[in-house]
Length: 133
Image (cartoon, rainbow, N blue to C red; front, side, top):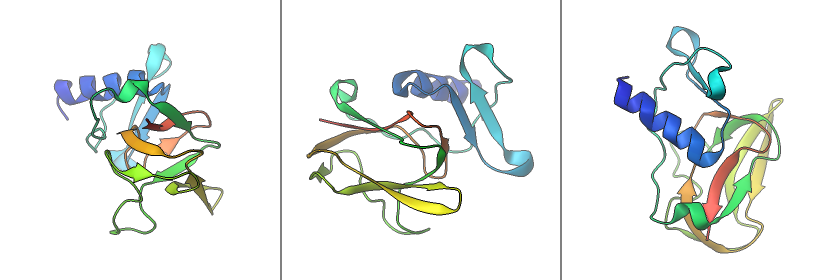
């Protein structure tokens, strides 16, 4: 990944309030940590798409640490995408934690303004996953 890609990931981390971003496995694994807390590297996946005004939406945060999955199974369509209308209780994603698949649901209805996490990315409790307006 080039420097522009790294800068885009750093900007995504700042916008979504992420302290750390780690993608990939083995020798292809990369990790970004804000505030100089560790070595910086690039990610293998592009940042999620954003809608104009995404920062104004309500944040949906990860209730636990784990791995973010945008779809119910590999190769399936994601639960939601930017611009999708959702109702309260709709499944937005899955977080795998300790070998358990946990559905993350919308607390209220609205439009998906932002998807802050790439599929397969590790998340920490409190990380912003989505913004709903």
